Image (cartoon, rainbow, N blue to C red; front, side, top):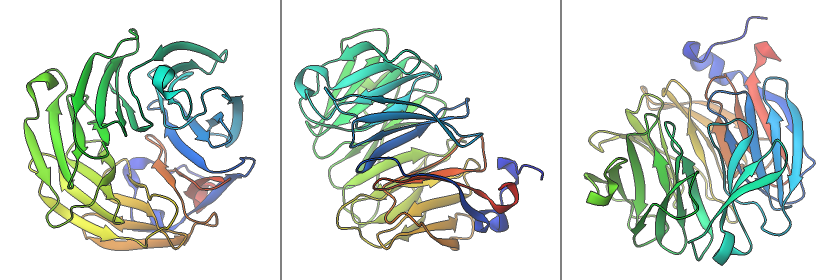
Length: 319
């Protein structure tokens, strides 16, 4: 059957999404997952200290490596399809971040500086920069080619970081539900704007920019999801999901920026239309509460993960 394009998404295609592949060979929780921007690859980390690489076009596990010394927590692809940045769960003082080659299972570089666990990690879409936010109340800016931190922001609260899709701007969450925006080329001059989500002072767990850079997606500790205008901070819409007692909830844009997909504490997955501000789909996740959720950059597909299980969701007509 004809493969659906990401430019053709509509309510019917969204509603038709169902599980096309399932992997249940993890031990414990899946900590994080990330898609490569241009290659058909997905990488995951788990409580079993594993880093796993998947071919998303064929629904196959390509490689598994284990990292008993440091553990595996947050993870992001670099520009190279076989290289990732991974944060540690152990030995945080000396080796909190690692630049790993999945091709030959080597650590290419250690990045030292954080004193507590890294809770947010993202790579620049345009160069070798990446950012990490830690429970030590710092955001650090790094260069893949240099061991030493290139810049540091000290702040209150649990920091969450994200680059826009052009790499020109990055966002940092602050205590009290505030988002500060920085120019990537002159972040040392301080933020050029600050956004507040009116009335919600909860910590922000996750920030994502839409592909066109016009919208920001926020997921908060109070299980609220907001879509903001990325230029003026105006709230375009907001959605709420059921609370989860033991995991955080992640949400994701579709590549066209028209839909939001989210997990929920009741074990369902939900989809909303941003233009109509209405729910268009509700699925049984079949894996319990999904703690990790991302849409593939170039495919009509998303991945959802929970304790011990990873699922790939695709439209019915491609199964």
